[in-house]
Structures are given as C-alpha cells and as structure tokens.
Image 1: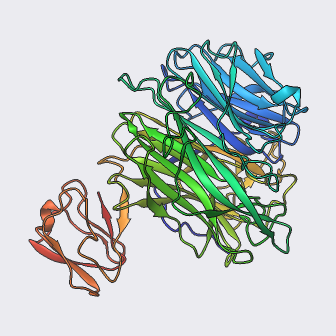
Image 2: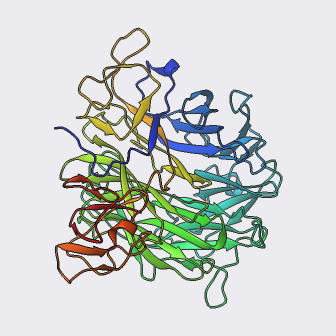
Length: 546
C-alpha cells in the first residue's frame, strides 16, 4: 500500500545520520540522542545503539553531513555538551548496570575512557536509563532510576559542580512506590534553566511514581496507577531538589490532579505498544530559556486494560511548577508515545513524538509546535513507515525515547525510523541520505546499496532534523468544522473573524491584512493571491499560515 504524509512540512530538513562510509550496515540503530555545542551550534554529536554498543556520529556543519565518532560498549546512553562548550559528555549504562561518564571533543575523534563511574546505592550495580543535562557554573546532572534501593524511592539524580569529575547522588522521590510495586517508572528527566537571571541555578526534574499495580493484560503488559511528579532546585542541586512541595513538604508537586494509568509493556505488537516498539513511563520536561517559572511536561497516559488507548498529555506551569494546567492531549483513536520537548527563544513550544495507527499498522514521527500557548497547534508529519518491516531484532525497536532541543528559534531533534524510503515501506518529508542508494527517495525506484552498488536490506536508522518557524517557514493550522468564534484565535494579522455556530464556512473580514506574508493556502483550490477581497469565506479543511 502506498504511504502518504498527513501534514508534511517541506521547510523541515531531515537527514539520515548514517555516513556514506557505513552504507553497507543494516543494523537496528535505535534510541537516538543529541548534543549541540552551545558556543558553536554547527558542532553536533548524535548517538544510537545496537544490543551491545552505542555508535556516535559527529557533524560540524549543523547536521547537514555526518561522520563516525567511535563506539562504546554499553546498554544505554544520553549526551550533552558542557555549558562552557569545552567538551561533549555521554552518560552510559554499562554491562553491570553502572553509569559511566565519558568526555570528548570534536578533535578527539571519540569519547575515550570513562572520567567517572557510579555503581548505585551500596554498589548494587542496578541502575537504569541515565539522562544527562548540563548547566551554568560547570554543573552536570545525570538522572537515573536506582533499582538497587529497597524502599521504592528509585528516581534519582547525580549532581556535579566540576564538569563531571565528581558527583553527589540525590534521591528525587522522597515518598516512594509501595512494596507491591517497588520502583518508579524508568524515565527520569531534567530541564536546566541557563538564562542569566536571578533564577540562573534553577533545575527541574520529573519522574512518574507508580502508586499501585492495577493489573496485567493478555499480552503480559503491566498497568499502574501513577502520579507525574516535578521537583525543583533553586541552587543547582545543592538543596537536594526540595524547592517544591505542598502543605509545607518538599516532596515535589503532582502534575496530574487525579491518578493516571501508566504502563510498562513486556511485549511487541500488543494493545499498548506502538506496533513493534515497546512503551512505558514516557516523559519529558522543558523550561523556557527566558522565564525559569515557565515549564512544560509531556507524559504518557493509558486507558483501561485492553482498551488499546495510549496518549500523550502536555501540562504547563507558569509559577515554577507549583501549579499545573493540562494544555494538550493527543488523539485517542491512535497511540502516541516517546515525547521530547523544547521551548525556543521566542517562546514557541515544540513536541517531538511517535504515533502508531492500529487501523493501518503504520508508524509516524511528528513535530508539533505552538506559538500561542496551544490555542493553535501545528502538527507536521516528519515520516511514516509500515510497522510490518523491518522485523524487530531487539528491544527497543526505535527507542524508548527521542530527543529534541532548541538553538535560538530553531528546533533540532533526532528520531529513529525505517530507512526504506520507497513510498510503500517508508516515506519522508524533505529527507537527504548520505549513505549510498539508487533511484529517487520517496519512490519505488529507491534502494539502499553498499559502495559497490549491491543492495542493502532496509533497517532502522537515526535521523536528524531542524526547523525554524518564522514568516518564511510559517506554522500551518487547519480550520475545523463546525467552527467556533475562536477558530482563528491568536493568528497574526487576523481582523474580525466571525462564525455562526455549526457553520461550514468561516467569514473573515479584511482578508488582505489577515496574513501579509503568505496570504491563505487553501487545500481545495490551491494558493489564493495575497491581494484578497475585503471579505471572503474560508472552507472547512482550509489551512492558514501564521
């Protein structure tokens, strides 16, 4: 069956990270990470792993081309650049489930030997999913889940004030999951405010506390009642992340007013997975680079056992995490997970995520952006692929997470997906390949090859993308039906929009001033001229730039 992109955006540039020198490879390169040099954003390091090692890649031209940056033997990893730009750091999970930290530069060619290793509580070697972020004054933070503790307080973070030479462990969950559960969900995430203000040492951490076990479905997937908890430090972690709490406590704040259902899948192609991709504890957090009090969280929320419902919820706080408001929820008719959040310098919020449609058995990767606090959102489809192939080689299929960051007003991110861009197995929006191929991407003539022209089997690759929403690359929204009077709320240049309840066309007055940059893009009749009449009707399904 021929694939299609529901809302492609040709202004989003996508690059397959695999270098030409690796054209013969056909491995499952999953779970991508990204680090960008804060002093020279042209320098980027990405990573993706196989069952036994992580392959790292270096770009020195802003992600346009990539080269190999060595490999490390490990089971998990994340990457960050130090705030002073002196080195890139990668936190890895080694074979014995200890965390090791490595440092490298663009000239070193690889990450070399560990500069720090941590074995967990009482050297139990039972850690999971390290997540590294950096901040001002040589601060480095590594969030992780310490499964070696016996009190259910597993969400933790390592704090360094000397660029990763030494660390102090901090327990983030000071309440803990009950003995019947024994741990928090795997993902522990960080958001570091790096603005030069009185809040310069503000750091947020988020985790999902499993409060009770509610059951197992027929495929063996576990369901939990849960709270998404945010804690905060106001002095770079020295206070133990105790700045938030309710009723005089320092135990953090629950993002969700009532318990959610959190899942941990133990199977593939089941009711609660993204096809072959397992799910569990999906979570991310981001802080506004210009306002330390403005923070957003995205988390996974499932339906009842057997419902097949898996959604992402985005919540927002404007008072430093003390209170939260739900702003956006993905469609319940399909399944969404693997959230990655970022906020750009101009306040645009970006959400990268993966979607699975059970009715078509297709996966798709999306970048959702909003310039007006979710009054309107633009959901651009980056790629779509059949879930049928390539077959999974190991868990995770494409990764337990994606990665997204912002550089100025530009979003830069990475996701993993099938590289079979032939229009039926996979289809991308505006993609370029470094690895060898024949034919034309996006058509049936496309085939991956090695350097000798021999066909190479499709596989999972890491992809990099960048996008700057602005007048030249406008956010696109689709007009709904029936309309409400707020259907065009927040759009630049709107003059006197009006609508009758339940009407199928929206009357917009003074259309010439509605969008001086690009006029209106009408999906049924093509582009309308910028010099529009003083009033016109906009049909349901029309798209508008803002």
